[in-house]
Length: 315
Image (cartoon, rainbow, N blue to C red; front, side, top):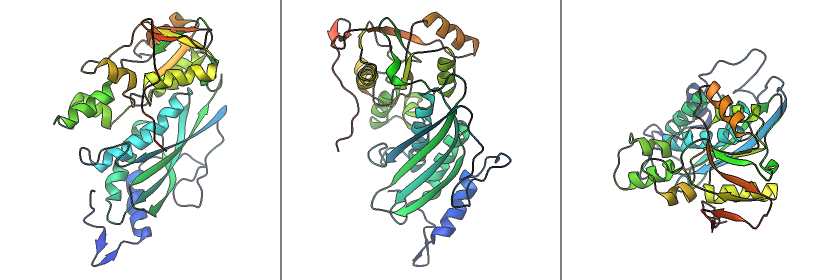
């Protein structure tokens, strides 16, 4: 586990307030809107939300969500925030802020961890407005994000309709391929390795899809082979897939079940309008992969049943 050379002063652990002061200098780089209060009080104060308010929580654990022998601790902080923000993108929302809670053993380099947090927060325009620290046996970070959905309101998983076109925002399997390549010795700056360690939430795409009136949407965090079933379970429909777009360097199995791609999965009865809005906003056109059907028992890929497969925690 990465050790912080400044974790001990003489033979005494650093006090929580000393650590927090240093963390605040790392994650508090954003400008605070007038009338709001972020880190420093018992609770953050945010201005009123526009439209519907969105709240989501995600937990990342070292050794489960990131292999600490292959990646720096900074990547765990980045992935934790990015994954949580992706849940807002999946609803067509925009971020307003996040609070983080970190549990770690004494000696963990908390500054390194929070540098990754700060990078993801800055890149997604999701300020860190508060948090907490606690001692534990393992390194874990819980991120709760707050967002808003003006106008039409949030897009749910439960709205897919028979006849809808199923689309994704990009080729799949890059994250899983990056982990495989890193295990084989690829450097941290390898393009696919970066896709695994520094995932990018599709915020602009989520807003565009909401504005285009998609019927259902979610992010692909656990793999198409599992998440598409979840969307269809919520909507009480089936599907047939004609093809799966596989990212360069990935395998078909990685594209189906690899997980952590964070591309968006959408259904719409007007795919031409959806593509037009994406292109008009300078976004890559979404890729059609199949169609929604009425029969919940029909769930196929190229005519064969698509079994549920992807990442699931064993609890």
